[in-house]
Length: 289
Image 1 (spheres, rainbow, N blue to C red):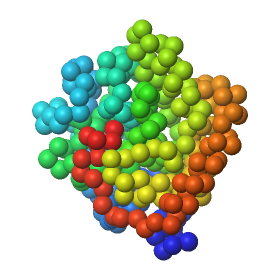
Image 2 (cartoon, one colour):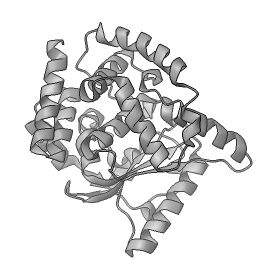
Image 3 (spheres, helix red, strand yellow):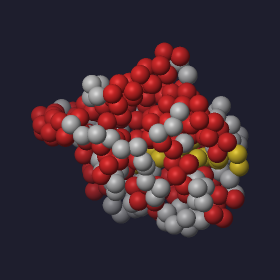
Image 4 (cartoon, rainbow, N blue to C red):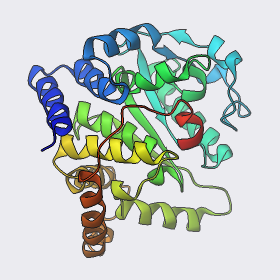
């Protein structure tokens, strides 16, 4: 193993041994931002925010254009269960379907708990005047959220930043973690949208996900490999989560193993032979979600 991969495994193993979710997340954040676990945790503690859906409108979630006004509507939150849900989504997916899904989930939450859920939503909770610092805190922000709410449209499973959110939450909380998947189905296209999303879930392979920055692909997939031993082990965990939540019929997964294995082997060889940079893109949320 390279010294970089040994460093990754060492930090993740230490976090797992101490059973400290936030410290483990801070370790990943440190790797993404090339800083210490202590500094990553301190930075995230000071920057963690949340918002209520009642403070947003459909127009607010229609585009990823920066809006400092939305940040002003957020409130500070505690990393100890201070946020009910981290909204994981792709900006390339249909905004109307996304807004409908958010309304439905929040209404169900309020009916069950007697209050509005506190949400982490990137466009609102990321300080647009200091995007890079907040991006480095994303793994710790995830650890402070009780639920990972995945709004899964046709592009979600192809976006590497989305998969990194799924990876981090899974690694911190395990397969038993509270992950809720809401498929984004457009009116009038129910059959085609459902078919496409089901196929993507059954064929999920992190190696096929893409970022706008090629260097980020190598680095992020390398972190996943180091944490799970291989991309396929991570893929198995993710597909298992999908199946446990009845997102895909089990028989759909049985028809794609040979093709996926061939593609995975080719990609992993390339990943393990390359070195990893330490920078993350300051515009990653806008371009990659």
